[in-house]
Amino acid sequence: MQQDMDIRDCLIRAGLIDPADPVRIEALPGGVSGDVFRVVLKDQTVCVKRALPRLRVAKEWSAPVERVQNEAAWIRYAARIAPHCVPKVLAEDKANNLFVMNYFPPEDFPGWKAELRAGKVDAVLAADVGRVLANIHAASAKDESAPAMFRNDEIFFALRIEPYLLNTAVAHPDMGRHLHGLAERLASTKIALMHGDVSPKNILHGKIGPVFLDAETASFGDPAFDLAFCLNHLLLKCIWVPASTKEFCRSFSALQSTYFSRLDWEPAGTFEARAAQLLSAFLLARIDGKSPVEYIVDDRDKAFVRIFAREFLSRNSQSLDEIRTNWETRVLAR
Image 1 (cartoon, one colour):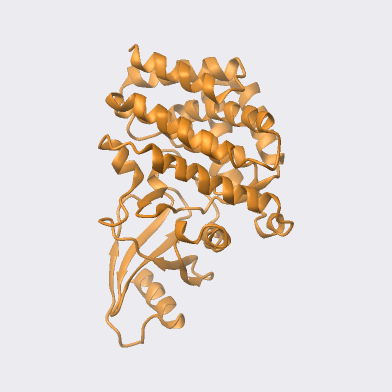
Image 2 (image 1 turned 90 degrees about the horizontal axis):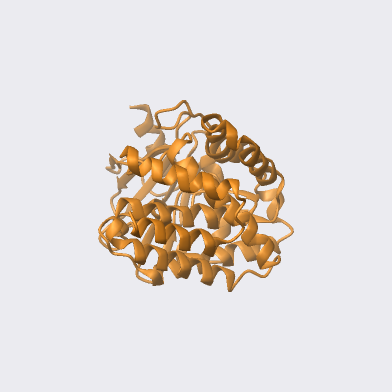
């Protein structure tokens, strides 16, 4: 098939295989925005990623396929700051919108999301995620060349602002003023390099720290987005695995405090206000936006998240601690 031929041609051009070498290409499950393949070569195993023009979600959701080039660029940039926390880009085929990176065996690099689902909640890993994320944000905030390298407003709008904020406003028109205001501010804030999809499903638990994947929505913008996006997932996991609620909230605090200990590019209070406002919006978006989390299916659970998110969005909470403590108290009281 054409896709296999494109992958093989890319590997040949990169010098990773000879034309006569055998190659085994296996599609990996779980890709929402693209196809991911495990490719077994003669002397190594690699991973190939290719973007899809339409994402695999229930609602119509399209985005530029060039975003896969964006991901490769983010990996290269982040490798200058945290080389052990990102893959290595081995080859790139911009014409066919795919790139090759090293493969991480799941037995050595388990997914953070799978660990959380199993009740294995490691606050040290969460703190490490906060540390690495803050280091990348800090370095890029001080790098005058970074804004020009990541002018990806079209991709970020299509993959984040529209589906998470504007689409949620359609479902909750009475929250439209808040959500549209956040969307406008997010589009205009240019401070540091965002990963754009910092979530447990995109982080592997390596022996010497986290490994960040899936940065195709990377853009120079508001670093508060990344922090709020990840913290939101830790709160929602309390609904998925209620028995680990206290541990999830401890991980939330560990990630938050470690991140803030390295925040030196703007006043912490100003940053936290933006992060808290986005966090309330993301809670609502992952129920009623274009990309709802797949593990909250019970109507009572959805209503719980919806009510909480609407309350803190409407009150314009600017404190992450306030949101976390109220969330923990209410989840435990259910």
